[in-house]
Length: 299
Image (cartoon, rainbow, N blue to C red):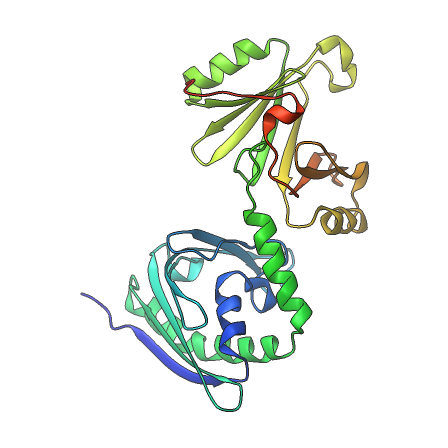
């Protein structure tokens, strides 16, 4: 049985332009946790962000996923919508914006594809309050807030030929990097992408990536003979993230520095002792300009 769509209309004290930004790349302006938004406002592109439930200890985080199906600037956002609340179903969401005389916007929301009646009723009850809160929060935001959100979205989506297109990139160290590369190819189906000086080798696997680095066990006795491993995370603003990490109990391993391969990076150790490399793409750099060699048609 196909359930009827949820349909809701309201007037919001925000311009259609700002609402369009809020529903595409500006989720953190009204709904998402800061620095969790990954979105490019193009038809067919995926997006995701996280929302922390207020008043929960420990914090309860709700991931949101979707894919833009149709975008008309300042007029329409149509996308898929998957959250814990949709119980895994890939629902469809359409939000239309019509400017009104006082600078506000008439908003029409349609949500369909629910898995069951209970889920549909929950969303029918929730959307009016969500949109009311959206209007209030966006109305309090400055032009600078919206500009910063658009800039962060551009930075997150910025491509760099010298880096794999992945948000999390682990580095694994091996005494024999060549043997490790072959193992990752044969066992996990990784594809070699780039050979860096070091030696270091970038490999991709699906929409993820891994870096193989050379390691001499005698040079790192502090690891107890275990190969060291680090995790790189690409962030919108490395300086902000670095400062926030230190303010929340991390220790600095290296301060933010802009590097020749188009990334601004810093490194911290979290309170549990794990090392993180924070990386922000600042330029698209040809790998050959800093000594790396792209690998073509090598499986």
